[in-house]
Image 1 (spheres, each protein chain N blue to C red):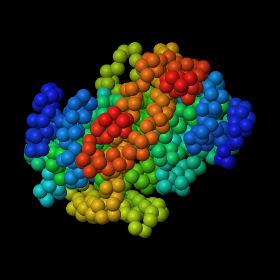
Image 2 (image 1 turned 45 degrees about the vertical axis):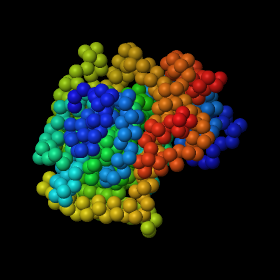
Image 3 (image 1 turned 30 degrees about the vertical axis):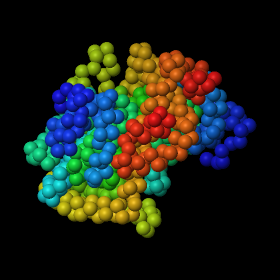
Image 4 (image 1 turned 135 degrees about the vertical axis):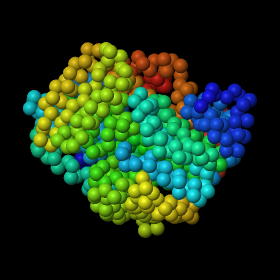
Length: 319
Length: 319
C-alpha cells in the first residue's frame, strides 16, 4: 500500500481518489486502517462528496459462500456498468495472512478491472477499531465515486453485527448443511437481515431452509407497511439466482429510499460515528492520575478488594 | 424471575445467594440483566467473595453442538461433585423466544439438580450491554460459590469475541461439515481458543478438521513456553471424549495459574470493566447541550455538510 503520504500530499491523494485512481484510494483506506492522525483533515475534505454510494453488507457463517456471492454480485453490477468497491473486513488474526488468500483468488477476474476496487481491512486487534474504521473506509469509497460498496464481513465475531449497523442494506447468507433455521435464529442474524439468501441451492435441504426462514420471518410480526425480507435461493458459483438477487436489492433500495428507512439508517450511523469519536476524546481526556491508576485499580478489583463501580469513581476523582 | 427486590431486600438476597439458593441467585442475575440502579451496591457487597470460580467460555458457530457439550460437561463436573453454573448469553432477538427453548430441553436432566444453576441472559439490544452485563453476572455466580461457571455464547455476533475476554479459558467448538480449517481461520476463532474441540467426531471429515487445526496452531508460532492449544475430538451427545476434555481443561487451568496467565487475564478483565463504567459515566456527564444537539449534528454529518470529527468537537463544546 506504500508509505503513508506526507501532509501536503493529502489534497493530491484526495483529488486522485475522486478521479477513481485505485492506488490513491488504497492509500486513503490505509490511513483509515492505521488510525492516522490526519484523519480529521481527510474526513473534512471528503464530507461533501459522501452519501451517494449504495452500501450493501454481506454476512453469514463461515462456509456459506460469501466470497463467491460477492464475486457474482460484482459481475452482475459490472454488467450494468456500475463502479463497484468491495471492502472485506477481517478480524485481525495471526492465522489469517496466508489462509485467506485462497479466497481472494476468485476475485482475480475483477482485480484487473479498473472500475472495481477490492480491499481487505484488518481491525488490528483494538476493540472498537472496526466501529470507527469501517464507516470511515466506506466514506473514502463513497467519495471516490463508486456506485455500490459491498462490505463483506469475514467470519463470526464482533464485526458481523457492527457492520450491519454501518450499511444501507444487509444481506444474510445461509447454506443448507450449515445448520437449519433454528440455528439461524440462534445465530442472531435473522433480525439484522434485509434480504436472506440460501446459497448452494443445489444441495439437499436447501428448500427446507428457505421454508423455515420464511416461516420465522412471518412469525416475527413486523408491521404490515414494513419491509418483509425476501428469502432467495442462489448458486453463486455458477451465477444461478444472482440476477434475481440484484432485483430484490434494487427493490429494497427503492423501498428504503421512499419510506425514509434509508435516511434514518444513515442518520443513525452518523450519530453512532460521532458518539464513538466523542467517547474516544473523553477517554483521551481522562484525568492523568486516573489513567495511570487504572492498572492499580484493576488489580484491586481483580483481588476482590474493590468493586468496579468504586474503581470507576476513583478514576474520575469522584471519591 | 419475579419482581426486582426492594432496597432493604438486597442484603437478604445476597445472603441467600451465598447460601446457594437458586431463586435468589436468579433474581440477582435479573438485576444485572436489567441494569438495575442498585448494581453499584450489589457489586460492592459481592466483591470480597469473588475470584474463586473457574470461568470457562464455550464458543463456536451455530450447529456445532455447544448446548450438548455444555450438558456433557455439567454431567462430568457433577460426577466430581462440583457445583456448576451455566450462563447462556443470547443475542436479544425477536425470533429467539420460542426457537431457543428446544435446546434448553437437553439441560432438563440438570434442571432439577440443586447444585446446578442454569440461566439465559439476553443483552437486551443495547450496544455494549453484554460487555458490562456478562462480567457482573459472572461475579454473582462466583460469589454464590459455584466451582465452575460455564459461559455459553449463543450464535455469532458481537457476543463471541467479547465473551472470550471475560472468561478464564475459552473452548472453541467446531464440527466436520461446518466448514474446514480455513473456514475456522476466517471465523477468527483460532486466536481466541485455549482448547479446540471437534465435536460430532463420528462424522466424515472429523479427523481432517483435527489435523488442519493442529497444523494451523503449529503455524501460529507461539513462544515455546506458551500454552499450545490442544485439539480434541468429542461426540458430546453420547459423552465420548468429554472426560479427556475435562483433563485438558484442568491442565490448562494449572498452566494458567502457574504461569501468571490466569491472574493477567483476570486483571485485564477488571481493567476493561472499570474502563467501561468510566466511559458510561463520562457519556452520562456530557454537556446537556451537546447531547441534545447530537441528532442535529448527525443530520449534518449524514448530509455531508459536516464531518464526524468536527461534529464531535461541537458536542464537546470545543469549537
